[in-house]
Length: 565
Length: 75
Image (cartoon, rainbow over all chains, first blue to last red; front, top):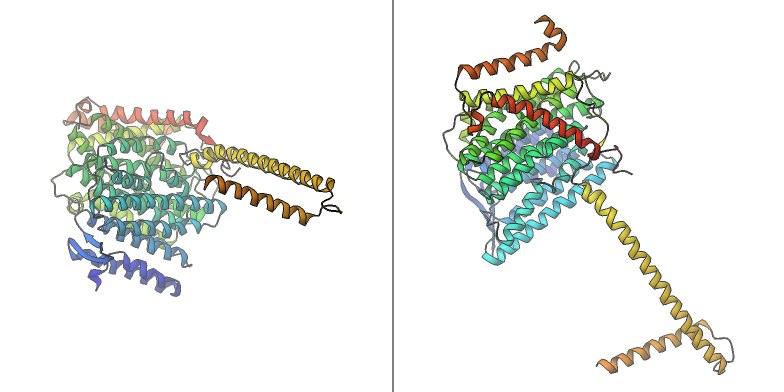
């Protein structure tokens, strides 16, 4: 029975019971759900379950070497989310997170595009509640934009799937040709969720509006599901190298000037996705391993950073760099865990980021893509700047903000320590980590050149930041909004459309007035005729005029009828 | 040393020393990069330092037209 259930589906169905359970039992129940779901991962590779509906075959559960690492990390992330959110007594976020993570896990195991589409949309509809739960006007508006864009992405996927089905007779989820129309539609669908340049606005718009628990969950699933889909369907598509390189590059500058530290992390997320997209674009075994390893490690350290900032938000009520500072003495464990996350994302040796990113950089070097290599090297220094230093520095050190608070709740600390430990374990024992990657390759990240080169790059980039701060060149963080690509549909399009709509409205009104004026004159004309000829011996009434007008309209119809038919 | 710590702070001085140690390490062993340009002596150090400054400079220059009031979208 359980073998025919795709992993994740049990979490989605099981989530329906969550509202009826008392708090502690609910937490245990959610853990059990995740473990039962994870059991399906032990079934081995192949197609485990499919159903037939109207002669169309839906592969609802298939697994291979690519699905396994994503399924493992999604389950680990789901467990960390349950622990991290254990202090939340209300059931609403727990239902959303459990069904959201379940949908993402089920999506990874979809064997055809229609099944993928169902889970694709399910991730959107379940995750939007994590933004709505903030209950602010901003979060409501942001959630609305989020769901529109996510559903829009699903529409592209569905269109691609239907076209693929009509052209080839099958909607199997496999490698697609970017030159075909269905390939392009599917590519756009994945690109929206992967936050491609100019399609990324929803990411920075919505994630920081979610609750402290919600952002941790959001940072894990949606974008990494898109990365999985790209790795499965568009590995080796060269355009991805260019798109990915741009993605690693430009969010750095936005992250540097952004004040909201959770929003800084979303820019950083965007930049990290770029590394994965570049690797998928290269498409070699080493590169695909790099993309998967990076997604795996990224979920942990990015989740850890969001957990740290979530804990700060939970305790202090803000995540703005301009209002924070000096929290280390109140929240030392949170600070240390955040620093471990920051060191990991910066790819210091002995931490997870290093063993993952090295694969991608080596793949680039091997393929001789020198320009892109240096773009990514530049982006690596940028990651250190905005995620490695800015996040922990402005939250826990920088200047005295005068805020007095206390350490994060125990459950948050447990989740953060677990994530930190995993970041270190992956960094220290990379060979075990590499074993779960799609391709079995021999790779040694810890050689003299890699380690010394990376340490030089990072310590000197850190030293540059220190110089800028010490000599007071670094400007103070300001309460502000940094314009992003969402400006196009939040300001520019309404700015153009509203005057246009007003103009159309005005023209419409003028036409209405003109028609009214014409009818009035026709009425007067006939009334005068009838009065002059004494058709009626009294003043013409409204009822009479209406009958006459209807009669005239009828005559016109008959006239037109006769001429054209 | 004391003067440096007083002027520059403990953590900053430590980072400075780490930088020097990693430069010395390169002189002891043979470091080679993924590309031939990286084989230039102390290239990663130079690249890291310059990148950070460039990122900062571009970021600050972008402030003038990307940074708006906090309630920009609420107006």
